Length: 465
Image 1 (cartoon, rainbow, N blue to C red):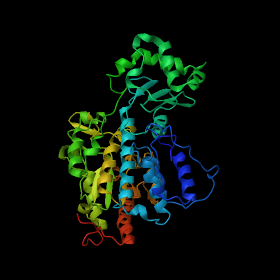
Image 2: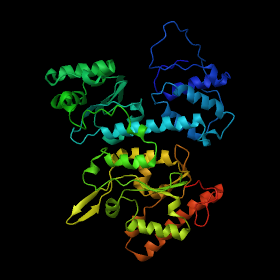
Image 3: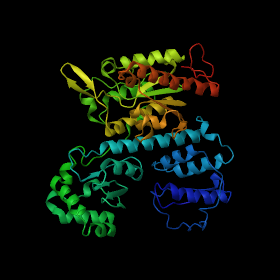
Image 4: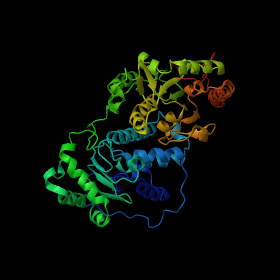
């Protein structure tokens, strides 16, 4: 079975649906890698003509999210892996819960690596000094450009941009998206070539669609002029305008929390490291069932190198004790690992991390979740919610709802303890504190329903720490 796209989930799903309807077993299908050379002597495949609306067995929602990510991986076996899992899910609906299963484990690994690669690519593209229009060359490890387009549109609004990758390129005109062929890093015109050469360069990448879209529209000469002014050649040497990612993801060598804790000290994914004392990684047992995620380290955490040891952390500990939870049985971390602050005299005043900083640091939180594999994640505050879900949302809109993350972990949303410390009125503070306590009681209530135990005085059903 040969697909035409490297990472089109809809195309794979249609092909897989046809195979499933025909009762084809996974071992009867050979999935060719679209990136590999074409076999000129291969017989053309007979594809079902109209199967898109025919019903097949349903799959858990978590499989769709994982498959949409995993299909963007460069691993040539991804198509066969997904079909094998799809076939097995028809008889075993709970298959994805078996994280020790080789196929399930590999699916999670591919999806996690794709998510990290996408976040790394987005973090590498910076527009701070590139003006309202920009172009960037990126070198992701996997086929993540398309799945990153919504984030780029959200970040840059209506301003035109172009992102060029070795396997594909995409441009936003301010009104429509254009997709084109891949671009070599060294294939751009030199600065002296002028706007005409740049126009031809983009026309060669995006084809007739570029020429038609550019005709009579102001964005094309503006985008081209901005490139000519900075030059692709010069921008290659300036971070944030034309960028390339490392050949190998550092996460591939990180297989333990101890290794991750050491690696994060060298993180340069955003500028926050420049003024922080150190990166503050999470702490807790590597097999914790519950993971608490806050915003970022505060002043005391930055100095101590431990999460939640300042005033907010002390309040957090008191509430945990009140509701009967043991912190030592949980994993506690933050969405952002470096302290962001504004110096005022001898004091360092907390500043909320922006979307770019949250996105850049999501790599580390995803890594922690992959290594710990908690069954319940508690997001404390809007920053934690944005990091975990990839979307900005108010606490009130999610609080008290039954939520699930793409990997199947349950998600509980509550306020950050520092919010309680900032409430001036005693009566309102007491009321909000009771709500916070109720949210944390829901943690052990969740495990009571599952027959597990994370409270003081027992460890039934809890994995050994």
